[in-house]
Image 1: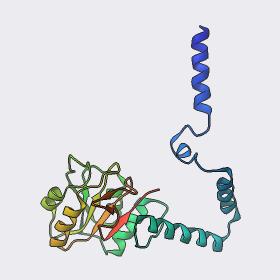
Image 2 (image 1 turned 60 degrees about the vertical axis):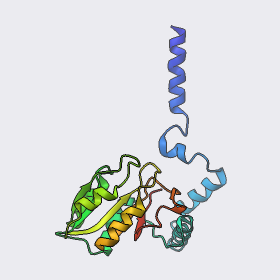
Image 3 (image 1 turned 180 degrees about the vertical axis):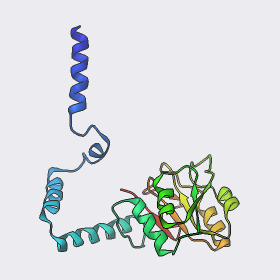
Image 4 (image 1 turned 120 degrees about the horizontal axis):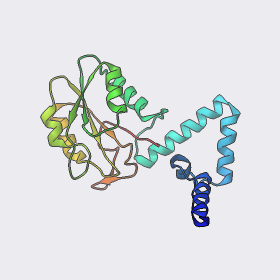
Length: 198
């Protein structure tokens, strides 16, 4: 009986320890001084400083990916929606998505009034498949999303060839592939635009 009680206490103590759950654990490497800067920035409510922090973050993040520019959003779905709006995607248009994707992607497409069209994934990369994309392209296709899954780059070079032949822009979904590369080129540098998630 004492062994069982001891095990239960150990489990409860482990569950109550800080840095045991997802997001917090992923940021447990931050030093106290870095946490203090974050707390100060959040408490300051200083619009000028906020713009400086955001601008610095966008510049540093973009340089990590490549030599392009970056704009930050509160979420990847907001970035994807904004990209579609910039491209003029709306009623009657089609956006090709991988059949294996997060629900926020088709939801953003629906929000524009367009229709998601699903293309099968590549069994080797679990990401977008050029052959599957080519099979579902229609006259209404206005955008192709090339998704890199689990840090594994999809066959983006082939997808870009398909898109170029059809004159359709490509957005790379790099939400879970930051710093991955294919043929020495980091993901996010192949398409016309890219979305990341941090």
